[in-house]
Image 1 (cartoon, rainbow, N blue to C red):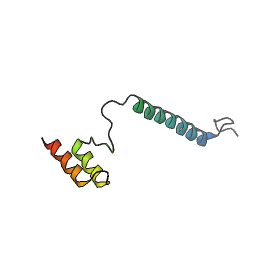
Image 2 (image 1 turned 90 degrees about the vertical axis):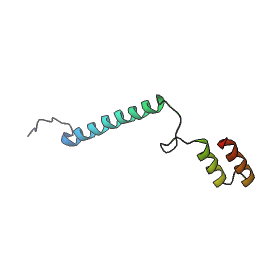
Image 3 (image 1 turned 180 degrees about the horizontal axis):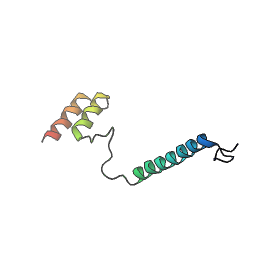
Image 4 (image 1 turned 30 degrees about the vertical axis):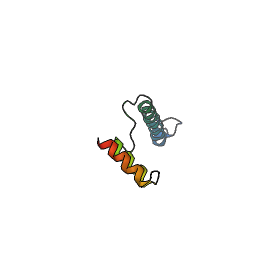
Length: 77
């Protein structure tokens, strides 16, 4: 006996179709956001200032204490 869905997949086919189109639209939105994003590049959603970057470089060991203190004084003036 026919249920009105013909020879298709019924409810499962409907759910798969919605999942497919939903993921396609979501992916297009993500690509559009990445392409047309404006403003400064941020990391973890926060804009970093020069002092934060200097502190991170010192914490990673990229700068000696003398270099760090000299750069910190330059930023404060």
